[in-house]
Length: 157
Image (tube, one colour):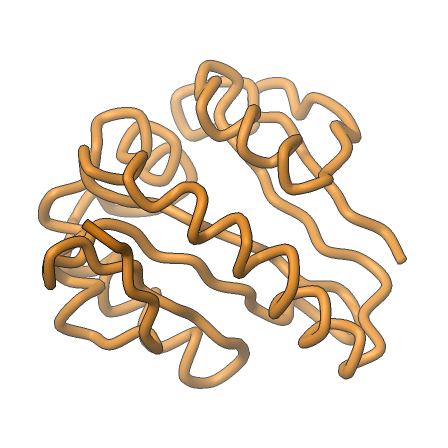
C-alpha cells in the first residue's frame, strides 16, 4: 500500500500523538513540561502554522507519521518527525520528501543550519537522521527532564 503525504492537519497530528510509538514518546516527553498527547498535538500544529511547514504520512488513509521544520531563529531551523507503531511504513517516503522538499524550502529561506535533538537510546531516529545526511554534532549530557542524554544532529549549508 502506498504512503501519501499531505500538509499537516490538527486532526492527523492529534491521532498520531494519541498513538505515539513508545520510543518517540520517551524522546519527546523528555523535553516537554507535560506528557499530554493533546498538548503535544496542539503545540505541534500551532508552531507549524506560525513558524514552519509540516506534513503527515498516511498509510491506507490513516495518519502514521509527521515531518516538520520550524524556524528557531533567523537562519536556524529545527526538524522533527514522530509517529505511530506504523512509522516504519513511511520511512522511505519521508526520506525522499525530506531530501528534496525540505532542502529546497530551507535554501529559499537562506537557512544555514538545521538541527534535531534525539534521545541517546532512540537508535531508529539516529539511523534515520544519518540516512538523511545529518551529522552527529555532540552529546547533551543530562539534557532531558529525567537527566537523560540527548544527541544533537545537524545539517549545515
